[in-house]
Image 1 (cartoon, rainbow, N blue to C red):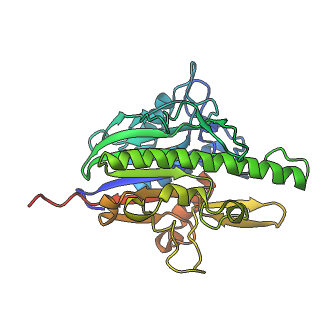
Image 2 (cartoon, helix red, strand yellow):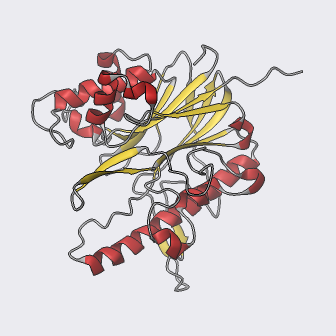
Image 3 (cartoon, helix red, strand yellow):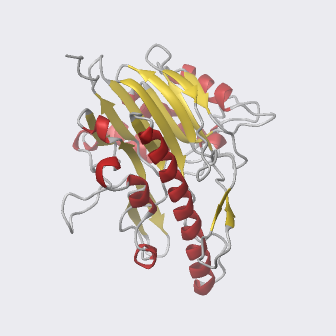
Length: 339
């Protein structure tokens, strides 16, 4: 990364909220966190190590600590940034939610100026509101909501003016299913809701592109091309809906395999208790509009697939300790000078 380029990253830090006390101070207690065999203190050190390595001008944090009447995502993250020695010490947010998994932007105020800029349209209301959509083709509209409303920010950066939409889409996992039939029912229902969210999101993308914006759409989509059998049932993935087609298509090289049958990259790693093995998944993306594509470079900070990380024992272990997701880094060169 050069000093004139803009470094953006997106990272889902698994249950980051559990690393903070209810007064938003750090919680380095020795008990085990949501990471199997990893203590709070060890996970905090790991997150700090990874964020310091990324050294982003702006880092989209998925599953950021809680915000509410008695909690403050800003206080928690800004305190963490000072403790970790990061240069990105300020936090921008949009609409808080009640899941204890916020979406926030941790940024360097010397390099980035953000402004909350939620969109609104008849067919795509603000993301903290409700959209009527027929999800099951019964000619009756269900009321679709985001449990984690996407974050919309206008950014002034060294790469020019950008519009960011930060996303944490609905999980398709069949949590609470008592048997295989129930799991199938819940899985189909969750897939419908996730696709509905992605349609809503794509409508916002179209509106922003019509305004001539340079656009980044990033975060955890809980989905990806070819990820599961439901894609055959519903025709395409939510990620493909958001990417779109033609001149207004967004681009992330991981989202469209270079050739049919090629192994997909991965941004997450989960333990499959039934098969007794780790499973890789492509869930996290940093999509850009066509007017940014030629200035963009991507990197997934994967502990095994990235050769530099694989040779760095400390960074590799920090990535494994910190989260079940891995950061996606997007470097944007500055716009060419006007002729």
